[in-house]
Length: 532
Image (cartoon, rainbow, N blue to C red; front, side):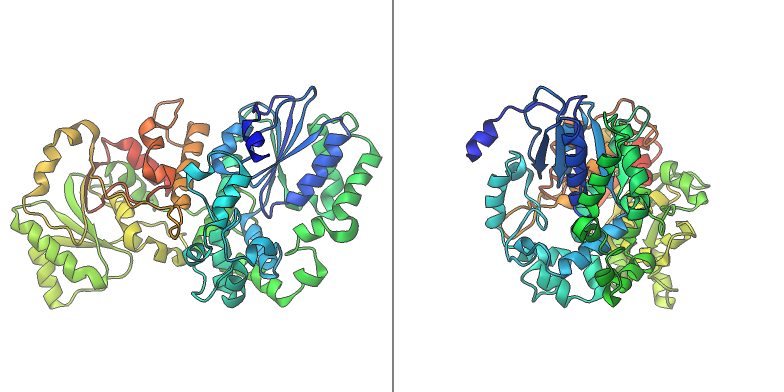
């Protein structure tokens, strides 16, 4: 049976098709009911596609595709045929709070109360998921324990299932865990929004909140008119849709568990979850909500850099320029950082040096000042380059590894030699600026070891690869996203084959030593600034 499914011929969604796409906690049940009402009353058959199932074979008349649990790799498959697309969307903060309450109650016990993996908790390596056969994929999931994924999400060590995780974690920790779990779904929703946005779009972004009781009638009529439904003015059609969506309280009441269910929305836990989303959401969730354009609480993504630092991010402008050595440090690493700079000076390197930190290094004592003077290094605080509207709670995410790319953008050096605190140099690295590869590209990078993911007890690294795919979708869909690159743009074969893109490894370029000319490699610098 499963083999026959794999051999079925596949054709893309055609211009006369309707495609309904809903994500977990954006209204999958209401999408199914609306699709059945509007499609069947117009003589269209509804074909349900879950996870990575491909479009069904064409039939004589237009078909209705109901797509649930869409994966980012399949966005082009559903958007490339010119079909009308109804995309159910929701504020990511509401998705997280609704998901947290829903899963903490023990809903969907088939995966929340299982110690094995599932499509809702884990991600498969691309090679295992490429077939589109959800039945074959389930065999992979059944062989994968959930424990490594629970640890990856930040669950307590004692948790064996996702239900255990949410019930043993506190409110703030549980909501942060649900944010991480839902990030893949939210990023997919945002990527689809980006790809289907623009002049001539045949996509209707349908907000779940527009289907609440007070606005349901107007939304339904508008949707039927947009679809050019033959019975779009039929009052009986509207009445049938209301009965299906609100009758018995099993569809929209459940979908609005954080908003419209008296028994649950009014509970202290639900109120506390909503308050967390409004006042204390994680920086990542605030950014996702702002990017969605659906949030009333977080309507804008605050700029990363201040106005004076923006020019430096792309070209090293702002009164500096030139070449220099750059490194990041923290109190526990300062001794090693100064030792590295001392070794650097011993090679004869005379380049100016900067030590960057994110509000962690105070005023050095007399001994520290002497060591900084000997290393000929200036200490710079990244906070001075950041926009004043940036919430202080986001500073923690900029420490550690993230300090390095941000410091490269914030420094007034145009040509940067980035070094780690543990780098050992035996010759003056200044000569690397004369390397032919650097002269050609404005960058000199070294390969890191390839640390593979996806083994039985090691989850594949999907979030970074999904983030890259999301940036690529923005770039391809919007000429203004990266104006320094040629248009039309498409990812190169080298990028598509990179382990980081495929989710095989987070290790690709070694940041222990690299060179970058922000003015010459303007596209790379602009991409970094745009991503920030």
